[in-house]
Image (cartoon, rainbow, N blue to C red):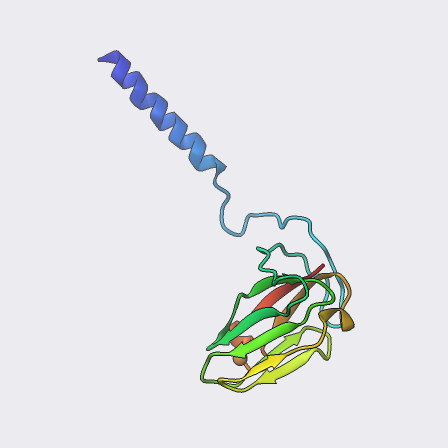
Length: 143
Ligand SMILES: [Cu+2]
């Protein structure tokens, strides 16, 4: 039946078009976002889902073995970070290029000072100084 054949061909064409729309991994242009340059840090351009804490409250970040949850979050400059080490290893939260650095032992909590005390608005890398090589890194957007 020619109608059915046409339908199948049309579907195949639609699928081909759909596939061409899928960007290849590593092929994506980073979206324009806030940028910042820090000593030793270089410009950072990244977008992330906003996991903001309620206004004024410190943004909660959990340290696991060995990653941050969330590993991308936004704060206002007046907010700090409420760190919780839920892993079995010593962990640390450091904003790249700053002395904003906090060690947290397993099972312990640590509340940082205001992020705006050390950086202006922008997007910044943070990492665990013990496990950076293991990929324990993240991004904080200061608004
Ligand atoms: Cu760590």
